[in-house]
Amino acid sequence: MKGSVRDSESPARSFDAVVVAVETEGLASRGAFHVAADDAVPPFADGTPAATLVLVGNAGPGMWPVFAASEEANDGGPDALDRWSRRVVSRLARTLGGAAHFPFGGPPWLPFIGWAQRAGPVYPSPIGPLVHPDFGLWHAYRGAIAFRERLDLPPRDDRASPCDTCVGRPCLSSCPVGAFSADGYDVEGCVGHISNPGGAACLGTGCLARHACPVGRNATYAAAQAEFHMRAFLDARLWTLGGT
Image 1: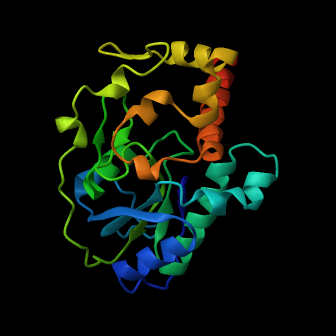
Image 2: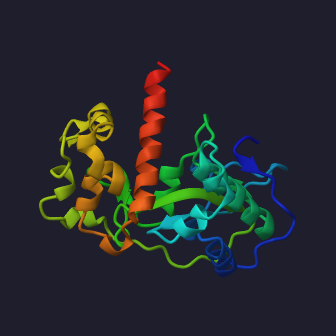
């Protein structure tokens, strides 16, 4: 199946074993849940339904040194982070006896936002990306591993969105070009800003609206990581505009 990697026959021993294996690759477990029929988790290649889904990604800057030293990050090819994620998460899935799924490579697109909200305390922020009570806006999902087994999982973290009690919501007022408003996200205004010298701060250190969030300050990406993501966003957007 497109977007998936065939599972091996070696089963994961426990959720703790999955967490340890994921961390050895520079990634982090981003929560897990027992799969229900309406979660739209693809079945295994032999038709067996998935019983547990573990989300894999980064929380804060811990992933960056591992990725930055990888072949994909240094070979000059496109989509370096996606290629690295596919290689690493696929290897994890094979080792642990699961099947890998990814938030890229579509269409069709897998419902990663819904999966993320099933797996842990993340909520849509006023500026769009999911916010976490500890990591704020400085986290991401690089893949997921499905298991045939119903693994024993820790209790779900049910903390509320930090945005519910945020005074002033500075993320909405800190964008230099007012790209975030009650009307939504002005993508073209944002792209125009970071495409020009006046947007150097946003491009080089990361979105200023994201930096304005008071949650997760100790999880902020370093400048090199933030710039990588901003340039990837800009390049993708300019390519889209050039192709339409």
